[in-house]
Image (cartoon, rainbow, N blue to C red; front, side):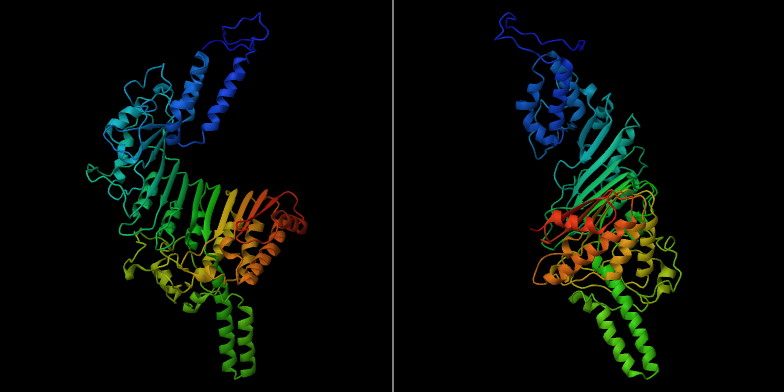
Amino acid sequence: MEDEKTNKKLKTNLSENNDKNKIIVLPLIIQKQILRLLYEEKNDMDSFQILKEFPNKIINYSLVDSNWFKNSQKLFNNFFPHIYFDKNNNYNFKINNNYNNNNSNSNNKFKLVYNDLIKTIRIDYFDINNESINYINSLKSLETVNVECFHGCCLFTNSIWVLTYLNKLNNKDLIINFELSLDCSDPYEPTDLKIIEKEEFKFKTNLFKVEYDFEYETTYGFVYEMIKELNPKYLIIEPAQCVSDSGESHLQQYHSISKLNQNYESVEIIKDFIPLYALYRFLQSPNLHTLKFDLQFHFLSSIYDNQIKNNNNNNNNNNNNNNNNNNNNNNNNNNNNNNNNNNSDCDSNIESSKDSGDKDKTELDFNKMDNFKFIDFGNYDYDEELRFKVHDDIKFYIDNGINEDNQIYCAYSRSENECISIPPYSMSLWNQCLKLLSTNSTITNLSISHNCGDGCDFDSNFNGLFNENFFNDFMNSLANNKTIKTLSLDFTYQTYQSEYEYKGKNNINLINKSIPPMLDKNTTLESIVIIYGRDSGNDLELSKEISNLTKNKKCKITIINKIK
């Protein structure tokens, strides 16, 4: 490349003696920086968007002069992932041959797309074969391979071991990332796949991202198998935006996925709730710095409510034995007053376990109680025998262990309309989660959202109240943590404005009352975002109100009202 001197100018046919036509050219180093900014601006675009813009916009940058071409060539091949197209495959988009990097002229140094400079390549999952591997091995500067689904939504029930082709990659330092979309209604999966024997994966995976829709006839058990075999550092799981008529999607394997926790650095489970045991295992991840997930706060509140009921029932039984009817009546009244969370109609279906509120009466070692083999639970009309069942006797779980992959309290879909009972170990398990949250020393970015799903009227009828003891315990654990710097708490579903507006306000008041004491004690937090689902007032004013109530001036407080 030509020497980049600060005073070097572009050649021009205009006379330098004519001041009106004289052009002052920016130094090449500034031109290069401008060009970089132009490419960085387009770096957020999807590769398929770039396909459309390529002939008219992007290619024009390279036609200014030879320096711009050389810089454009380098920036283009560095910034933008290039797409591998199998010539025998039919995709859902038109291929632009100028952009296609695996055509016959792709190693021509006078073309913008130049193999020797390519850093990242995108490839369809079902294009992974000997031919594509040979092409990938020819790319001298390649650093990352992104495996995706160019056909839209796919299934990989019979095709996980196609990935063994990637073991043939010469560069063992290549990073293989996965971004997959799953669907059971009309998925794409070739029927002519070669039978490939299972083989240990010898390549590195950083990111495993999967978007899924409601499970119907075929289930997604292969997701767990892929995560287990790929052992990614970054995990992102998210339901599809357009959920089925049955209601929201929910993946019933989070407990199993959480046990594969030794390599996770970031886990984001977006708009789907996890069971308590999954939270327990995720919090034990030795390298985790980012954790985002949803919890069913209705379930957690109910654990505390159930404890109150059991304590009062025990008191009533003692009073009955003493024939003290007056005190018995008073206790019944106290029970009604203290149980401030008669949450919803589905609570009336609860068959409370005798020990569900008994705290620390039985020593439980949760590190040993989930030693189970993975079961592929279906999410739609699955066998009644596979449903999660609650046993009153805690000894059952001590003898048989616990698998919470399919543990659901609030019905997540419209086909499920009942709440199950509370397992007798739940309070002990929640207490262990609180201790782990309080003492965790690796997580710096934490995001927790409330999510009850479509089938529970705790949210849909705006009829629920958080148990105050639950919320105080939750805030205390956050207050004691010494590593979390960024915290997000999303209470959207439980603070809607409605005909039950007073309950939404009560929850908001409880939240606003609990945040300042937590901030007073936690001096590590640098940013907290509190998300409401109703118009609870001016965002800035609420932030100022909480700021005025806390001595912590270090933490930035942001209030977001999703519904105005």
